[in-house]
Amino acid sequence: MSVRGSLRHHRLIGMAVSLSATVALASTLSACSGDEPPKKAYTVPSSLCGISVDPALVKAALPGGNALSTATQKPNGGTIRCNLYVDSKLVLSLAQAWWSEGKTTAAVAPAYPGTKEGTMSEDERFIYSGKAGVGRTVPSCKVSRHPEQDLYVAVETRESGVDDPDAIEKLLTAYTKAVEESPACR
Image 1 (cartoon, rainbow, N blue to C red):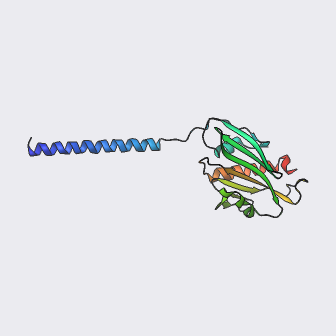
Image 2: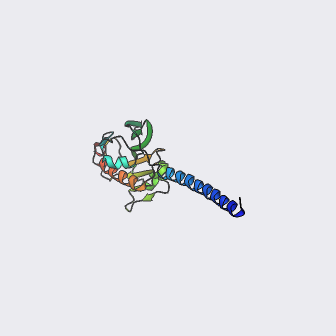
Image 3: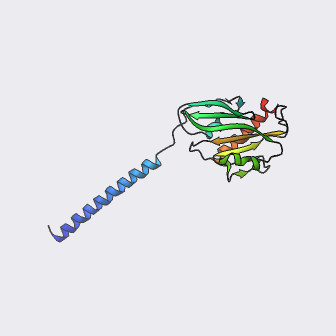
């Protein structure tokens, strides 16, 4: 083989190796970018643990999966928690909790770690992040079994991979309004 032929042979081998590396890299990148989140194959009911809320707002704060279930939990005399499970994994908790009258949303929020460094609404009733939020119900939300207390609502994602401040804000404000219109405030 001549020197010229040898050089051409090496260039072809180099181009083939380079082409192989490019194809391998492109395949890897397309596999990564093609990974879409799992579909949300479940249906969200319009009432969660007795509170009516827009299913689309709830679904936006949930991860993908096949089956959705809910369970009500009452850890103490002043808290009701509606836990949502996707494929048997706890992914979202919607809570109603009575706090001493006069507390601010900023004072209640630290009880819900996901609200750390959250955004406060202009009226200071809501604080939320991409993972959690706390909202104070209107002052007229009073019941005799919780005198001198104010009702707060909390929305918390639970290791679901969801981090969406817009979805949390919309769900929090809608859920708070729904609680205000429910027997919880009468």
